[in-house]
Amino acid sequence: MTGKRKALIIANDQYENPSLGRLRSPVEDAKALGQVLGDPEIGAFDVQVVHNEPAHLIQIRLEDFFQDTKPDDLLVLHFSCHGLKSDSGELFFAASNTLPNRLGSTAVPADFVRRCMRNTRSKSVVLLLDCCYGGAFTEGAAVRAAGDVNVLDSFPTQRPGRGGCGQAVITASTSMEYAFEGDRLSGGCDPRPSVFTSALVEGLTSGDADRDEDGEVSLDELYEYVFDRVRDQNPNQTPSRSFDLRGELYLAHSSRCRIKPRPVPPGLRAAMTDANIYTRQGAIAELRTRLISDDLPTAAGARDALQEMAHNDIAHVAETARAALRDATVHPVEHRLDFGQVAQNSMPSRTVELLGPPLARACAFQATEDRIHVQHSDLGLQVSLDTSRQGVIQGNVILKDPVKEEIVQVHAEVTPAGGPPQRIPPKRSVPVVPTQRQPPPDMSAAPREPQAVRPMAAVGATPPAASEKNPPADSKAIWAVCAATASAALLVWFALKVVEVFDLNVQAVWEAAEDFDPDRLKRSMAPIWTSLAEMGKVLLGGMAGLLLAGRARKLATVSNDAISTSGHRHGGRHLNRMVIAYSWAAFPLTLLAVLIQIIGK
Image: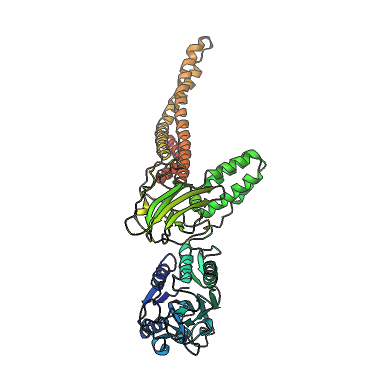
């Protein structure tokens, strides 16, 4: 879709009429949903929020929202407020000035919203309704109506008017009840933070609503996710939907994009099954290089191929394949996060740095405790806590890749928010993999919004990026430069000397051969040995230069692998590129220099 993406969020939690109970969730609902829909990495919507406005102003905003559109625009409208019905069963949305006995003039009729949706030029309209069951009336309030009003009946998806053909309605429940007896809500529910909108925000923020892990969250996937989450938390509430759409409608992007392994090239595939054991060993070496590549599909394809060889080949070759897989696993820098004592309703957050090649750092993860929230960050994993309830939070974050499983323990104690919490300084564990960097600083000083509990994340989330702009060069890169420098010096000396030395000494050997006297063998052979030694010295210098060039190339390749495996905490790739380029050019350049001297002679 190339049109605009627009969202209008209408939230009312305060009402002038005391008979309408104050809701606790709409303000936070509007804020959270607006943030996730407006996030350019997730929803990329142009979000407008209407908060605690009277009915006539809400209707003006609704009409403006639906009229100023084009056919390719995607419109999302969200209501978070009281849902009321008239004596005749018509549905109304409560505004700040709503009077329960004057719904027609002080509330927003569902019929008005339906007409706006029907008359808009946009072909893609999504309506999300999160309405309370009417709110709590004060003691002695008369009950104006009872029974159910089916929300979907108020928003039929047929659109006989002008506009497009795509319309979808998702509601927090199948119907909204309005029945009170004195000061008691007969339905037995009370205002509380919205399960429905929380599930919407959670599914979009975490990417868990992306059921097929294609990097996009469709409307169908979002509904299925919300349905499951709401039913898990409140079996008495059943979200419902009514769709009339052509094709898939995608609401958001997701970080849970599954990595699709790229098949290995046919030549490499043939080497994997070659009868010669050394050819198969060479295939493993090439697969090991591809496994630590920054290209995740290529790395995933190499991982699958190595797993195949580890299962199917003879013991010696299979063990080599398994060793290659073990070298490319994820390693958390810390195995325990101790938040200490944290204040209730605070937002503690810590980062667990992950080591390993890009594919390993894009591993799947799972929190074993609902109050532990995990998501990917630039360095690894961002771990935050739900501190809405007092008590001990203890659980694990499980990191899984196809080879092994790592566990990070999490512990915290949520204390009353009456005073500043006493924090226990975090203890950092010894890194699993040696590293030249110190562990990252405590990230808890920079609070972040707690994220939703995230189940097993798909392999392929965006891999963590390098944390340093100018990291220190890898030691092997320095050695590669030294070897390349020595090689260049020897080859330059060889190119300058070889023609002159061979010209003089070949002539000397020829003359000594002509004057050769068998009776004076030692004296006759002396100049020949001297000339051959001079020529051999130059040849050895040239061979040493070429060997050093090859050694420099190998060091540079190993250095590049080490840089990738370390999570790019070491630099030197530019040095390695220069060394590899020199190593391939060394022989032809030397040969060209020798030919130029011969032609010059």
